[in-house]
Each structure stands twice: as structure tokens, then as C-alpha cells.
Length: 150
Image (cartoon, rainbow, N blue to C red; front, side, top):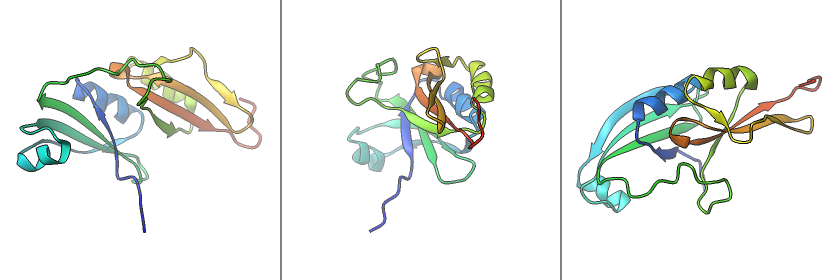
């Protein structure tokens, strides 16, 4: 049996702003459309839904992220600012080549460090969590080389 993650999904309010954030992070927008019809409501359990979606892909083609903006029905809950110890906590982690450069570029999209610092895990990674547009929680990790002094 083969199992693989096809994509991760995030429900958003401002699709354009969130697309801009993730494309700045290095993902490529591969498609954008509106999904509706009887079949889609049967999949999600929301009859009559209309959802604008955007599919983004990592440069290596192995990871995809689906962003959804519900037109109908209205959004019923907002978990964007939930702390990391909340049940159902969601975040996505990205490996980046240069964490400092990535953070500098993402700040233009309203990104904030969750703990106000980048943390080093042994001699393996520099890590941080950030809140992007709409409070979306994203982890960033830079793998350290054998001679790194970061």
C-alpha cells in the first residue's frame, strides 16, 4: 500500500494576501478556480458550498498547499490566533536555505515571530514559528551545515 500526502489545506479570508505570502516563501501558484456543485458539498458535508481555491506547489513539486476562501456557506469559526497547545492546532513547516533572508522577505507580508526569536536546535537546525497573513502559523527551519556557526 502506498500513502502520500497530496496536499495540506488552509481556509482563509483574503486569498490574494495569503497567495502573496506563500509565493514570497517560494511556492508556485499552479491553479486558481471556484469549486461548487452537488459533488463538492457531498465531499465536505456542506451542501450548496461555493469555494474559491488556489493550489500552490513547492519548487521541487513534492508538496502542495490548497488555500480555500468560502463564498457559501459563511465561515463559522476562527482559529487563526489559537496558541500552539490548542486542540486541533495546525501549522505547516518549511525547510528554507537562508532563514534570515526568508524572514526579511516575509516581514513585508506582515509576518511576526511567535516567540520573538530564532532558536537553534543543537548543531542541526535554526527554527522559528511565524504568524503570516491572517495569523496563519508557519514553521521555518534552516538546516545547519557541519561547519555552521549560526
